[in-house]
Image 1: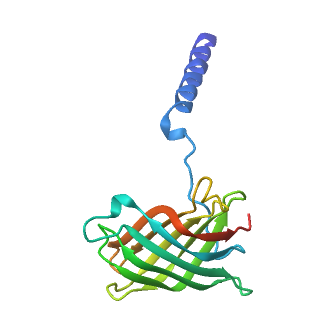
Image 2: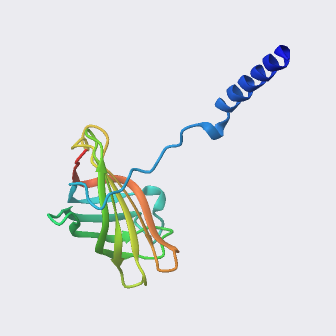
Image 3: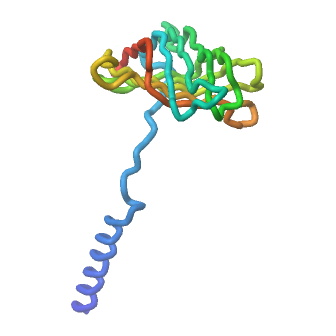
Length: 179
């Protein structure tokens, strides 16, 4: 009986150790917790250029104009527009304007990053929804890492109509983070 208990205990330890090294038990990276508004402010104007998204008829660039903050009500308010969208594989070009902000939150101290989503309007899109990320690299544009902007726009059917992620080439975006 003692030998069987020892064998079972050793087998249990081996199973436990094998499970520790199995990829399924690794901690997965999580999307930041999005609150309706966590005292974030995002403001500025910038031009973003993605060379791989340019071709004979597209510049591979877009402009961001944003003035957004958490209101005393606890909900975000302000304005956001993606202008002059000219990306090689986006089905929409021109301007996309945010109409409603559903969430805005930020993380980080040295390079605060804001996450924003909501509803939008554009002449070519029905049921427009957007997601935007802005990483403020604190004025290092001239000496180092530029600010980074990423956006995704879908229509009412869930079809991607525009997207882009790239460095700010001209202008500056400021994120004041609560964290």
